[in-house]
Image (tube, rainbow, N blue to C red; front, side, top):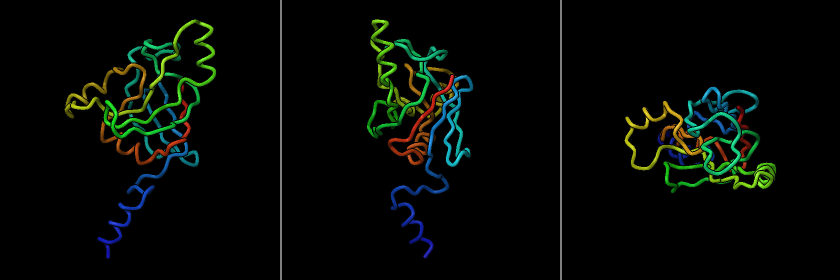
Length: 161
């Protein structure tokens, strides 16, 4: 009977063992931290790597900054260049307007993702100590598996300085 219960839990979409669904994802760039929240409570926290130039809001393509503000996690990609990815809805209307005013391309393809495909576990743990992305939010692959299960498409994400 217990085996059947475990099989049913694993086969039921939306249920993950020990992990609730997040209502919002909060990233605090200055603390290199991502927090999954539900009902105002922390479900889980992760240490993250950000863009190579993490201070300030993303203004243009190639600035290696991670955007700041309120966005939506609008789609998941299980077959990305990195171990799974969840797209952040940057640039929003305000970002596009500011970029047009400055005469620059705002960039895009900002994701929460795991490690570059082909990276071994040891190098992933070392590289996570540094801000190495082009503006994305990176975690380890095992953390990405947890986030993948806990975050549904259309979950809001607030990225703070």
